[in-house]
Image 1 (tube, rainbow over the protein chains, first blue to last red):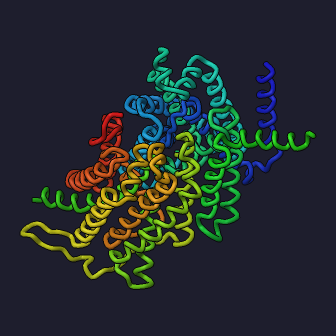
Image 2: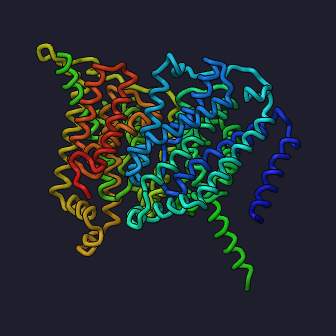
Image 3: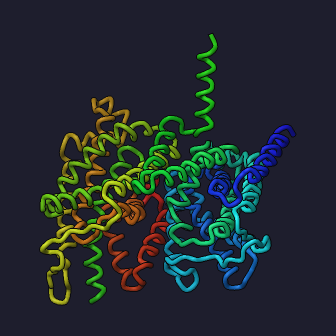
Length: 323
Length: 286
């Protein structure tokens, strides 16, 4: 109950933030993207964090979600809200199809297989031009300021939608984590063979987690499309732009924890935006170099992420103060 | 006839694929680390050969040893600074350290070399040998021969030299080899340097028929992993078989599919192999 109250207070406080910001401003745009990526990393966390199955291919679901709702909107005028449901269903089916052959793979092999799946989707997106528009990409038809069409002229309403999405995904993560499936997933993380021996259906458990994660990621893809109004196969199915970034956020924050993806996103996304705006004119790629170095530093210093790093620093400081 | 032509082209390209992937499999076999950044060393090899050509007028085939030496040195330093620290770390740390290195190397190249595509001109660039109705592309042939020579040299090194045998001993049993007086840490450093150096060598020999760019590594990541997974991660002989197989698959699929779907065939083969025989076609079940 106490945790619920704290959570509700934080969300309520966050919901008030847009009133203090310029509604068309840059800051609120960055915050929208941050919330979206926090939600994506949280969805990744269900599989990557709880079962420690490292997916490097979540862009497959993300891009499929973006394409599903946008194609439904362009070709049939279907509201993106319904498109988002369709995206979730297709994302779930895709996750099932990917999980069936890959769930027995461990560690590096799983990472490689998921990476290849996302690349398959990228190639399909680029070459199936009659449907996807090919490398040119797709533009979402602009019908602004309509809640039904999930489109607004200013970023402000998007802020609440993204916040709502983050809350939904985080609650899903928490429910799964404290359910039977959550315990089974953690047993799989610690030792697959031991989990199998005590009678856990490891394959079935992994599939359920993958399907939930895939469905959530696909529906967040719809939100991305409605927010950006334009995307192409290389961004929507991108390895660096989506797959790696989602996983990175969870890892830098603290993999497997509730707060990890959120802290990671609020660290990485504004950092990226800042370095991009400061450095992009001077030298291409410098912000990405810093980004990569940061990742290496986190892995070498504290692989459990920023949360654990913060705790270690705090204990060291308090020890130094104490006589 | 088109089939035989595609087969020969496939073997030529596949020989090079084998050579660039041997480094990746070597690093895994000896250190147990899957290096996601490995293809970036191919890119570095290409750029070293490009600048050797642009500034010194050196043919890329002659610059290949230079690429090897420079990247070998860089590899030793990176092993000291980074890879040594994650040898016993969880897989998640290993994966993301190498992913971080990939991002750094690619963007450093972008920053230093610019995003332009760069290619060299050589006197043999457009020439080909004709054997009746079959044509052999001379740049392919040279790259294939260079790869074959280098691969044989590596094989002899691993079989006959003391270092080679010590390296293989470290891969088999680090503890026992340490007891025999082998410095496992130094063997890891040499193996990593050798692994990335060989891939850089491969980067130089393909420069006559491919263009160098900072993102060229991305085109080779899945390809290299397909080669090594096909042959069994950690198996040098497997990489040779895998490389030839991938070259032939790619070349033959070009007969049936449009060019942009060529990679799709490769990915499907990759996933199928992972699913059916993750230990590789030649590997043993562990």
